[in-house]
Image 1 (spheres, rainbow, N blue to C red):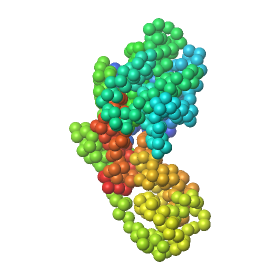
Image 2 (image 1 turned 180 degrees about the vertical axis):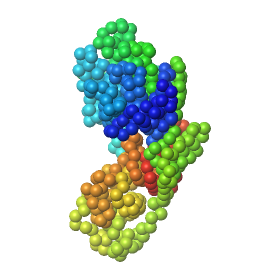
Image 3 (image 1 turned 90 degrees about the horizontal axis):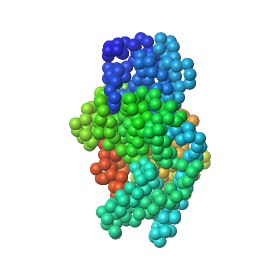
Length: 554
């Protein structure tokens, strides 16, 4: 089919939920592409899921492939379910693509689990709670073995760093030689660190914890990294033997579609490569956006995206999807400007589809006026805000209101501690009041605020109670219209209005004091800064119509 024929076919013959499944020219070019290895660079809001579903419809209806000839890898169960539902809902001249159930899309982890089960094994993947307990116990054993004493104030941070180290070590140093390779890497890496550097001690503890973790994690118990490694080994073995249920099941795969390819890791690369050993004629169709690569902390490596042809050199192609269908013009251009200034000045700009201008409001919430001397006297002004905030944070209730005139000296001192959050809360309340019927997403860089005792969940509860007390938004409406998330959690989501909380330079672009322990995985100050810039881009592009930047950064 020609490009014009593909566009016409989707316009007049393909529907989803009774509506024409239309494509733009770039999307149609991606669907029509037949290279052995194709990378689709899809900017935020450009319709990458639409392209994946359209690709499947085209392959089945026009290339006479069966769904069993296609493997689709999504990065979470929600996305896999959505793609399967869309494929099931596609109609070609009123007829479904297939009469059977649609389970063509899965996560890498689900795919790996099914492969292992084909051998008759029944692995039990440990829960997040179990894994956290194992990591905590492994760290405790490492500390005891080292003879070190860790101050209680450092325990939480050390545990978090150790958990990240274990996750990433399992991603990069896997397989039969993994532990040996890790040991060599550690031996060559530690001399580069100062003996007096705190990160040296943390690195040693994290490395020892990984060994204890693997020692405890024995079959049938497993984690996702070990599961992926086992599945890769089984695929490679079946490719060599050219026989068995695994080979029979996957030898006829003709297309491998990968979503969120910017978050590819060595384990994902290894399993795709092994699948290609079984079905060497299969095409690879990878869709992603290097501007949204934000999962290095979990083992992802954007190098697989940036150097796609190095990993998949046979008959490569790169197709851009640049039209943003999500956001209004000002929001798209602002995100473009940010990434070209801070990330890649040579990159191609996204193109806004919307004719609406949109609006971006920059507000230095820290300049919000609260006069501490007036707290007790201000019956109708700022004292009301602080009293309501104090109650929300300390009592977690909207009952028995606090009278600003009855606040004790101790209470006022406590309120002073909360003053930065009081300013933030007051600013957010004013914004919410302007958008009573719109979906609002509040995003923060971390799961904790600039006031150490106030985590993001605590802030959310305080905001909910405060809006209810001020008669701005009832709790039931709050639950339907407002989401408070970290920037990482917002990936793949969108909202009419987005508010970036505490978007201050020291909050957004902060180097972890012990980040050097991850240099063993290739991290550096450069990669860390790039990660943070990409994360900001993700946050900026969640907004459809209105974007509020509460801080002094952007």
